Length: 336
Image (cartoon, rainbow, N blue to C red; front, side):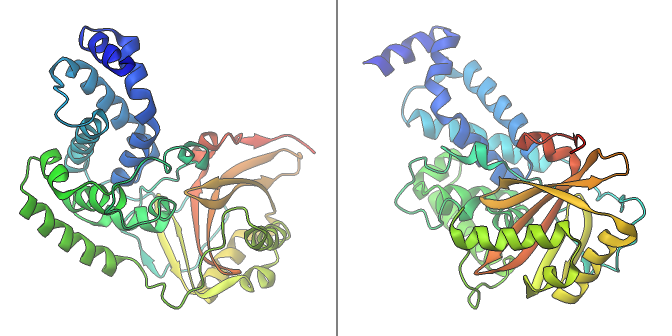
């Protein structure tokens, strides 16, 4: 009865009633847009566009589907429009002063990936899922998964997220995309095959330790000690043989322990030393990196996100310092 009253008021133009109806879905819709777009900023922009479109069209919402499903329909199609209309963004050139990195293993395809703060994920990954969901919700926000999604064609991305991540039925997805059930099934089959090809095999890897568990904390503590001491040998001991390092929006990517060690050594060269401030991104341990200076003030240079396997690090992703405020981290730290 309360929801029915809110519906009537919202259809009559009551903005507060509309906000009360849609607020429970806001966080999960933002995460959905992030999975679709790989960009925290773009996800927030599309979410705002989605809610505005829903508000303007609410008088025409007939309730043939749930409000949640209707909002996902709007959000998904806004994300598809955003992906189709966006020009391919070029990667940024290397811009770390006084650091000459080794030759990269390759140049990455997905250079505008952005991290997503764990503080905003909480509550969103506990949203109700359909019975056909195939992925753990924490896995579906990991950097590796979100990166792989960006390489898929937009429609494949949408269908795979709606079916395998959120568990919507095929007929619901067909309705959302103005398509047929047969087409949705065909697109999903291609998306699954492409995703399997894009994501590195993990059959021989130990599972990632549980979030904030003693096992995770032990690896993280070793990493912090090694990085703050610029101890490349101790850092290398933590890496898997096939460790992968990327640094969007710069396209440089490094694959393998030896070349990653040389990259880290280039960062520490010329006496560069850092302090790390812990946070979390995409369900993974992360750190704001602050460069120590002769004045004592430490300047934020970026954010590192770690991917763990057992007691080792199998991937490191560096983002530039523009993302620090999203995690409540300052651009600089005062003298100690």
